[in-house]
Amino acid sequence: MPTPRETILTALHSQLSALPATALRGEVLPERVPADGLLILRDGEPGEPEVTLSPLAYHYQHRVDIEAVVQGADRDAAFDTLTASIGAALAADRTLGGLCEWVEAEAPRPVDLPVEGAASLKAAVIPVVLHYSTADPLG
Image (cartoon, rainbow, N blue to C red; front, side, top):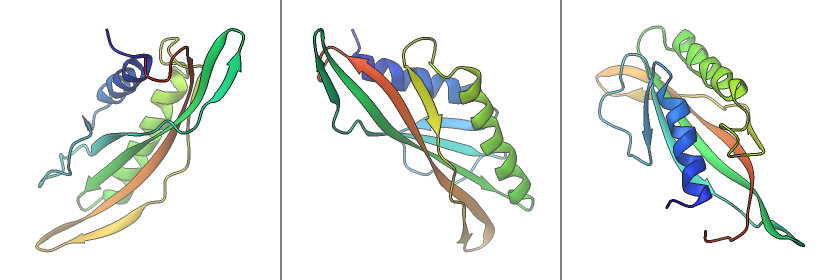
């Protein structure tokens, strides 16, 4: 049986997979970026939990990253559309079906990356904070 952390990360990846862009988890950047864009979910860092003792619970603010990448002539508009769709998907279900207490994204910091012999990439890391509690930090 998967841990709550893995269940939450899987649910977030599934939510991203419903978007038109290709969604990967923990993969390296492929040689080609799909026309609709690319999202790579990085598992991130759960950080130090706050602990309550009665009942024992570990409260995490787990920070994950979504790498968003687009390529092509109209990459600014494509990037804007892609990041807006991520925001809409997260806003539509802030608890990932009741698995989290709250999910919130932070603003991306886009950069243009030149590619030799091809259209440049527009990319950003979008930090997402997953607020959840568990009875066991390993479970």
